[in-house]
Image (cartoon, rainbow, N blue to C red; front, top):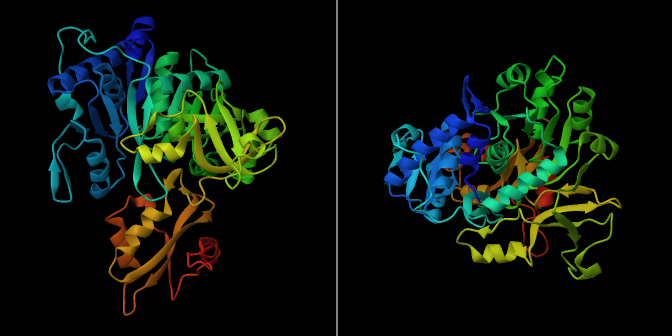
Length: 488
């Protein structure tokens, strides 16, 4: 397999590769940036198979680093810039990267210390293009990245995605949504998310451009829509909701598709978007499947409200009954709700250094998503619930067990139950019912400050209710459904 960026720079050297913050680079210029970073990686001792962690805001340099790590045979570990130091330590200790590239140099975490290098410090000026002659071949089966996705126990799991995963995902997406040589993907999803990373590789493989934003800002996004000739973008429902509230003008004629995923979109939101002329295509995907699994083009989505469409090329979806997995040969008939299973060449290689979780999640080639849904007679997928207890707030995944563990670690707290409460803007907001220990005293503000020091901001509860006793089932388990009703 060729070096994707090197091949692209030779095929279309002068085409726009990335436009970011008023600065643009062609594919030739991006290739040179990647070469300088690759030379720095080699000088820093990075060997094939080594992990290279990155904690950076979205930028042209970050895009170049993604390609540079691949060029030297390394494995990228993109770190969420919103995590606390304690959360970062867990991910770094699991992956043990040989190098951390960060925008703020030296990082400190829980009394430990590691040295990070900035992209500018890493960049060298090689006298000739970096080659892979002394490196293993650029193999499809080689790991490209380890992307973290939390588990229901609150422990982070690193999904290992290969180059073939990304290649097959790019091919399948292109078959569904098409490619235009003048496509520009307006991307505000962070590059530590699989959706943001997918755009980097797809644009390189297609020879199209990225209009890259560091973060989602309503005014900046609207201005970019009107000025930068964007044809594609990826949004989560919260972003679309804000745009519909703020946008006075019609959506530009250049914009041919909005991939809407990350959380379930309400029928009201979709109807408002289509009425405003927004070309919304509901999509379903997950990190373990390298982003997209199924996508409904706007006309099909309007015909079948609530559907996320048919599986992509070479992707299979089936619905099984967890309580009777052998029923109907493992699959439920159309219309019956069960767990969504996915199989295809874009399914991850496994969870890094977690064979037990891998064995539970990928069985006989089928990825057990934990999501509930059904297919209709035409094979279109409808989602009922994303991962039983998962809270999706503003497109970010929040697992209650992780937040509950932090709440229970406060000396005044005996027990806690965290649920998602419906929210018009965020989709869901994080809410907690807290039972104090006998004699325990803590104010809501103090408890939230305690959480903020240990959790990323989007995981901190927006609502706390102190209760005398949490509702329990007959078997003594906390009855999460009743807590949700109480807080909703």
